[in-house]
Image (cartoon, rainbow, N blue to C red; front, side, top):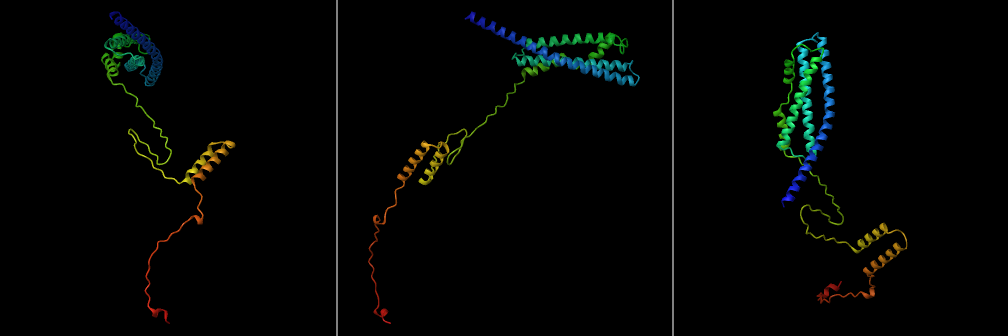
Length: 268
């Protein structure tokens, strides 16, 4: 029993580890595509902002430094959000439960990624001919960091919301197809039908209906001719010939009638 239990635990851990690896592989691919879009939008925003500042004669100013820090902070925020979204989607697609251990790993990874991007933003500012040496490294780092809108508590809130929110089940749609034929047709849903159909037809109607069915479904040929002949014979057997007048006996009830007449009625 113990050996079997340990074997099951090992296989479950192997399956979970494999699922986590596949989820991370999906997250990496999804993140690369999103990150390229974010970088392209960042470059366009920074270029447009500096063009406006240059037009106002403020390209080497505190306003330029603040705009650069703001745009970099927004870029880091979007990047962290894209990474978090890709991880959560990967775990969900591969059915990996978001337990406390995995939640802590995700947050720790994102915090490290945040710190790395902040360091690179400060280094880029040191080489930027527009904003370099306007302020010290620590001051510029504070400007960028103040514009990052996703904190560790916000990361945990998003993970918990995804983990604890009930899964939406797709509404099942069913299609009922009713094949309704025959006389006095009806259909019953979620119940039983104990009714009885009573249809009254004359013999002429029945034989005419049978003849139409034969002519519609039996190909022209000897078989069809034979069936129609047999049907005609059956119809004639069901309809007896009319009886002659000699076979009809008419009887009248005998009534006794007393006629009382006055002799004066015959005298003119």
